Length: 344
Ligand SMILES: *Cc1c(COP(=O)(O)O)cnc(C)c1O
Image (cartoon, rainbow, N blue to C red; front, top):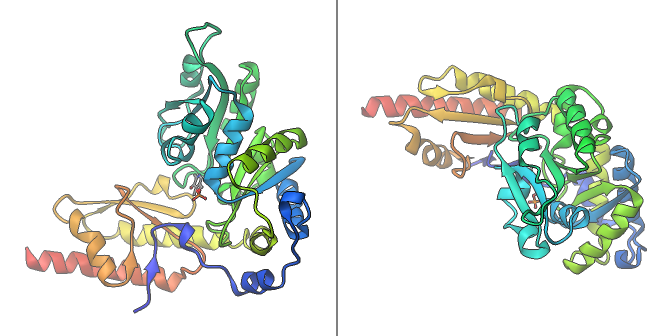
């Protein structure tokens, strides 16, 4: 039975071009700065984010952590979304390892942080308070592309309030494709940007933290301290180069498949979707109460994997998922409804 894994775009497998590239990659000791493939990947990433420099790191979590540690000191505070990856899903790293306190704020339905609300959480200079130092945004946020106008406003806002800015751009290219703009147009509004190679871009491992040369120099020390200084890392960076140079455009296909899936689901009785939320490669679906607990196990029996960690259920399209797969998912969901109704 063929598996159709829609739990996340992190399950993507490397392309055959990636496997070939990593088999023949020219490598050296990256802690000495001597791995030509890592150096090339870092310069490509910096160029694509319109930043002076970039740092190849083991994961998006490490990238976000290094960013907070580099922007903030012990006793500082960073503002992030209540469900932001770098608040909720990174094991509290900034607080545990950096003595940096998060100030979470609820996201608006469009994935933005309301700037008036943010302003009300910025702490004035008073020894009772942590020092608010950094504003973190995420793009895409739950599959939604932040409006460019909002990002411009957030940039002006942060400068006015003396805050540095970090973008968790794990899926920044999905956002750029959705908005039909160059990713630089998004990245230019942030002091630092983290991008993931191992999501829809299909590389096996790795993220890049991008920013000014001086910032990346300090970030490199934190990476070393966190145990992230890897030696012949060009073996994995080689796949990252293909991710950035050959896999970006194809994200459009994932977006079309997400649309196809959402359209199909929206026709099924008992399935509820907000089509406004289907912007990139994620589909969120809620089911009638009486059937919702049976859906994920039923689909799994037919080889279709859906994460049960989110509700509404989240289905993510990615490299390796075809339009035919999506049609099979829709047909299977239709059968699920029929099977269930015949039992009741
Ligand atoms: C996946 C992801 C990350 C990084 O995850 P890792 O598994 O640590 O690479 C960071 N932010 C967002 C929004 C993500 O989706």
